[in-house]
Image 1 (cartoon, rainbow over the protein chains, first blue to last red):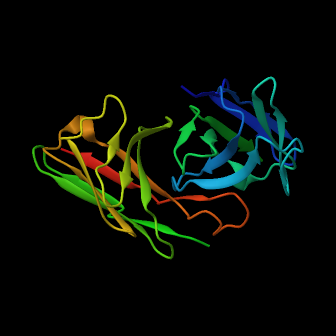
Image 2 (image 1 turned 120 degrees about the vertical axis):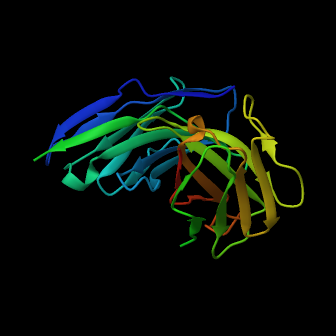
Length: 115
Length: 121
């Protein structure tokens, strides 16, 4: 079974600085997706960034980037120039490419942004 | 972009009653939808996969007679919590993957509903 582990229950960052959230996963599959989702206080899940396992290039979306290490099964999220609106719970998630939508989520990391 | 709605957004009910939660894909057809349960400050736990035209697939440990799922059409799935008890109080989230190719390439996006907060008194 696939598992996703987020070892940081809480993280804190100063506004305008950079923070990295960690995620490791376990799978025997070779082709899959990895995601970072943001869940603000409204609790609406928002896709932050996704990575396709067969792509070696790390995904980037504006201030958000990932460090994908397939061999190490590591998938960290870097948030640059942190903003107050980035404060939320962040979930790392895994999905087998052939399985339409069924995802496994990590336990989440609560990010606090200090002004 | 594709949107998934849930209704109601919150509900309070008495112990022993049944509650129905609807999940709709608003601008795409979803042959599959997923139901998750989330406790405060915890992860999303997959409860079941809702399949249009066939029975739902439940995850291990989820009581299928307790959580009835019906995928009535290509845009609607319902979750009914039967004989609700206080321990069923939780936040329930549905999601629906778009058809392959809708988002381009070999990727199908998964959209989440806004969630339903259930409180059983």
